[in-house]
Amino acid sequence: MEAITELNTHDPAWLQLSPVLDEAMSRLRDHDRDALLLRFFENKSMKEVADSLRLDERAAQKRVQRALEKLRGLFARRGITLSVAVIASTVAGNSVSAAPARVIAFASKAGAAHATTPSANIIIQGALRAMVWAKLKFSLAVGATVLMVGAATIAFAQLANKPDVVPPERAAAATPVAPGPGALIIVGLIASDAPEQIEVLAADTKNNLVARGFDAGHVEILSGKVTREQILQKLHTLAGSVREEFWLVLLGQTGRAQDGGLAFQVSGPRLTAADLKPALDAISGRQFVFIGTGNAGGFVPALASDRRTVLSATMADGEPDQPRFLPDWVKQFAATPRAPFADLAARASVDVSEYCKQSNIAQSEHAQLSDPASGRILDAPFGVNFPPPTNQTAVLN
Image (cartoon, rainbow, N blue to C red; front, side, top):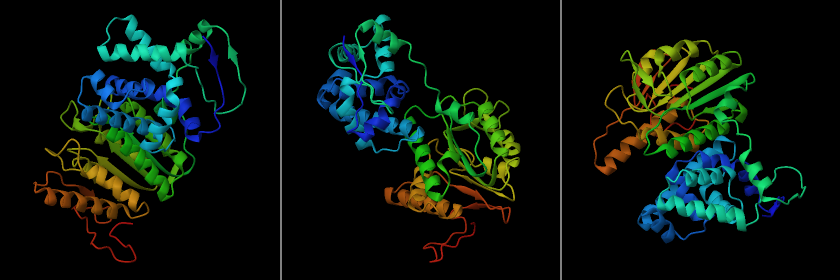
């Protein structure tokens, strides 16, 4: 088998995506990976994808779109901010002859185990054909050296022995933040029906903080199988570097700890307000904490401080696991990234109320915010009047 490496200088998007495409594909769930392999690596029509996955065509289209959204979130965590449309066109234009190594390994392993579904068998065959019959293109970030590899065994050995990429959450935890404003966004355990949305919202929140004026290197996302110990260690590290302003954003699900108290769900022991408060108290400067989960209101009084504003997307008990307030807050943040924290919260709460009115449904979620100046816990719209004054003043700055 002939293996060729070449530098593709005509597609800047592919130069960004190709070094991390194999890792991103390997992190997808099986059914999402199946959909992308059929659509882009096998170059199937949407009808053929639907037939292979035993879905109707509309459901197959949604699955492909959902998988692309997940890829967008994974790429964004690596600092690659491209739209879904650009990712789709770039992968479609390059991926048939550049099957990711980890996807090939997954396909081979599945075939060897004789535990594949009909759709998986199609994917395995297509992926292996892409290896045998197509050129293996690896777009290199640096250098223009063209190598000829004469033996197929060498190519397979290089793919099999490829070193694992360090997960971004581990790399972030090992990298200290320079003095100045900082932010930590944590994606905990999430519902299986919408994992890609939370990942994308986390990436969008980081982009919004950068637009607000934060250095991108000072805004970190911890995701995957993140543990309480990793989070507390990261907060300990930040306590020695962040001075003027710190943001903490928790996205995922809220449940109960073993003692029955409120807790943020992560791998292993859950993260409680009692864990968070001393860790946050050790970080200097003013703080803004957003608990973007259901049943989150109990965090507000537990974390309140005279230099900390705490916002919860919902009240303490019985409110949605996936609150609508979260995407509305991200949307308002993107629209006015430099707006006061309370202003963003108020605008998002208005969006939620308007949605419920227009949909003729009862409002089942109610955000709360602690005001560090008065020490009170405020209900929406948190003392912010609409329309806002021309000087953009608000209760909280």
